[in-house]
Length: 313
Ligand code: SF4
Ligand code: SF4
Image: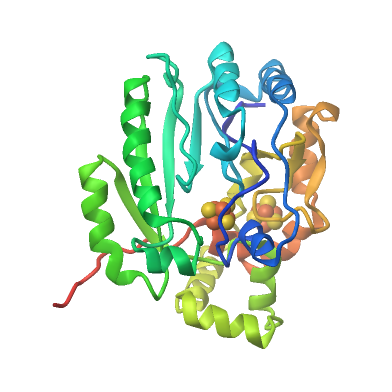
């Protein structure tokens, strides 16, 4: 078996944001419990196991997130030390609400990518979606990027701008900020980032209240066109079969879209599974059959990029 190119390793099952269309954010809004922080010893054991069984190779990048905020981890710098000891390239995705700084000039030599999750570019948008402090986020990004680059980070920084109906007119300001800090801005339509919720939408089973919320915030005009496009392709399968996703307990997940509350969340614990067994079990999950029938994997995994935005004064 070839090593994975991407391994998503959730080091923090928690996030402090409250995005409406992500399972973690929705639980935060409801005051419900989410996940935990990984124990650094367990993380080190997981990384060593992945390497020993050939799942980490020279081209693998370990992404330290799924639907949690990695920089909330109180021992995040220890996790980076472990990756450096094993010489494993890694990436993060962050809402930048809690900055983490490094000391050693080569501490981030293995950091390949930073994704900044942007729910708009004003306090109004932050109040509406993440419910975090916009000015603090901008200051944190600026300071962290200076520190990261001083500590050996030479990778690409992506501003992942989630386009909602309410924040289109803030894209220009986001682009100016991105240019100032050498960030590549990547706007794409916000989507329903939760398998069961998307299923309810496609099967017309969403509550009226939730559907009202969707029609007032998301762009969904492209859903039917994309499903037609998928049917025209004929037989194609979900690329998540070729990714490995682990949670903070080293459970191997079906994929990053099936929340921990749902059946079919996991295929078992990493330390009980060989690489071949992982491949076999992942492909046998019953949820995947329905996912292919409905086309959810296609709708979720290729969020539609915004090609061009026209501003009228
Ligand atoms: S979308 Fe990202 S930032 Fe928002 S609640 Fe979910 S994990 Fe947190
Ligand atoms: S088919 Fe759907 S449920 Fe299965 S791995 Fe892909 S996205 Fe996840």
